[in-house]
Image (cartoon, rainbow, N blue to C red; front, side, top):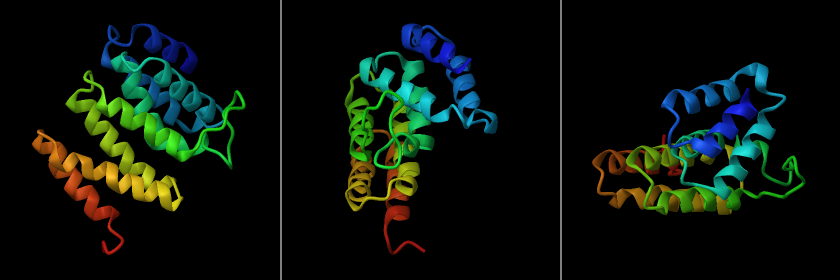
Length: 162
């Protein structure tokens, strides 16, 4: 099912109802899917790199990367096709999607949430610093909700937060 839904979103993600990408992330998140989770996240990562214009695919990929990107980044884990993906690659992909003209407020909000989640999953100092910077970008957003969330998340990422 996961593979079929991912393919469907890759081909017609703009035409599929929200329930399709929501069903996909539900399936990926279920405990029974844990043996296949890394493969599913890697496929979504690859699909997002190839085409970030299918909104359903974009939403499913952003959520999956926020939750499970640590399963596909090196050195601990390898992409199922043998590619090496580093933490910076994931952050760069999410940043590229954020900068796209087609990135809606909803997508930007999902990216901001993914940044916060990744701050607990990515351990390198470089990634932590980059995540703080990426969260800070939203402080000047024209959307009040994104501004407020950015300020809150920046406080959480502050080492003096208690």
